Image (cartoon, rainbow, N blue to C red; front, side):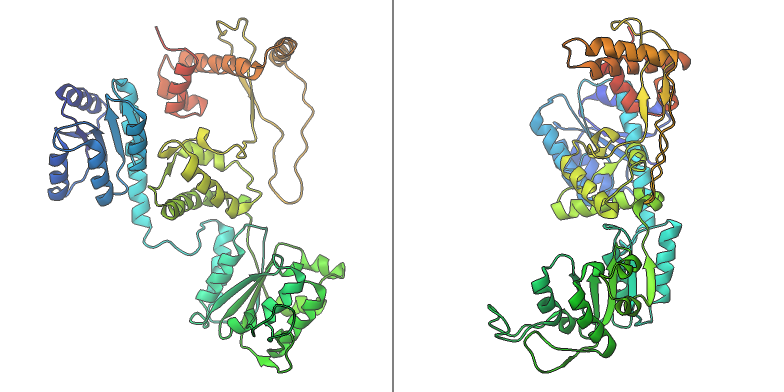
Length: 500
């Protein structure tokens, strides 16, 4: 295993960390200044697994070292520590891409726990670097996505018309672009138009162009999307929303390759491959008389169904890391990392907005998450979990009773477009009835913190029980509770449960 490098001009800090890491069987190497670290990085073929650096040192600050290390090893977790805890230092550390910011004096067990977490992140980064050569145009390991990839491969040498179906936000345009890129028309233009986003009066001109003077404001001749896509691919998104009268014109150009610009008298010929997409049920729209049946059959030569994100939950970790990297590049900041616990919570979300919603969440996290590593508590409010934990009712608010709390799941949630399973009627048990009575008693007062009071008592009971079962071993207790090691430490501090 690669060593943890410690950089601090204080010999006592180096000694304490070295001994603590040795007890955890983590190799370490120490430096007294930033200059020696940079020299070692140039000469040593074995870079560190994690770098722990003080801020204020002779021969260069820790923040300067952070900048230089990140330029050479962008995936290396760097923990910044300092006795001068101030806002500017914290902000500078995180803006520079620090894994975490640790003020002195620090609790040794917490410091080791933080370093171990950084080691785990470093190892994940190494695996990802080995697996990632170039960012692919589409991502997905789920069987449903593999079916899509295989279909794109089979269509790679074809000019056949394709219909892509799938929910909004599932990535239909990405599939269309991939079909174009891997087709004989790859050197031609790819032109996309969302037929639902353009007013009916303008859509005809957008598709077919117009002659000068065709209508008020048409001061020059304009080529439409069919002409712009000549020799390439035209992607008609949300085709199910196209006005009925324009469907006739579209059918004609698909039939013989000829059309007229608005206000024109000469036929224009175009050589275009059409790929259409919709989130609607076109068969039903044909039955309803709002979509032409002959156009439907003309477009529906090959149909590709793109799965919703809830049908490919195993792809969420890969997509999340990709979107966090992408957002960081767009914003010009260091990419944030996401913990396994946070990914677990994301995997329980239904994602009604599909991949687009996940991309937006990652963009929000890049801007709003307070640390470089995103924890479950950092996720935005709309990311809910389909489970409710109901606390027991201790005898006294001041001293939580060591009762065994119970997790009561809600009715199972079926994430499909068909239905959500109804909740089974539930008869409260004795402890639940006690909770109800306690809640009613508090709600009858003027208090406005009932949720916080009962939640704190519930969490206290859980943590006391878990620590009793593990004889005070916090890491094992956290594993039994299904929470992170950092979470149980933070909760113990917040609830005042520190051991005397």
